[in-house]
Length: 153
Image 1 (cartoon, rainbow, N blue to C red):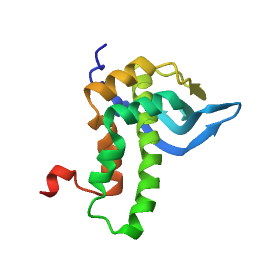
Image 2: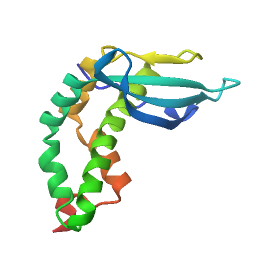
Image 3: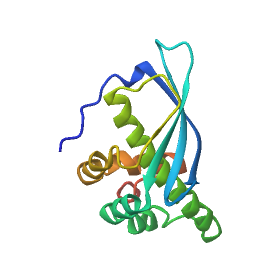
C-alpha cells in the first residue's frame, strides 16, 4: 500500500489538545485529541485519534525506537535523560496519532466531533512506519530540540 501523496493540508488548522490518555473501556488503546478547523468551516471540531497498543508496539519495534532514542539522548545529562525519555514516549504516541489524523484529513473529514478508531488507518500507519519512519521520529526530535545522532558526528 502506498503512502498518500501530500495533499493540501494547509486548508486545515490542527492544534494538539491533549493525550495520550487511556480510552474508557479499552485498556489496550490510547487516545490523543486534536482541534481541527478547516478554512471553509464556521467553527472547529474535536477529533480523537485512537491507537491500539499492539500497533504502537509494532511501530516501536519496526523503527527501533528504543535504540534510536538512546542514540538521540546520548549527550543529554543523566538527570535530564529520564524526563526526556518519558516525554519522547508520549511524543511517539502523539506523532503516530498525528499521522493517523493526517491520513484522515487526506480522506476527507466531516465537520463534527468524532473519534477515529484505531483500526481505521492501521494498515496505512504500518506502511508509513515501514516506508517513511522519519515522518514519525522527526516530530519527536524537533519537539525535544535535539540533533539527529548522525548530525552529531
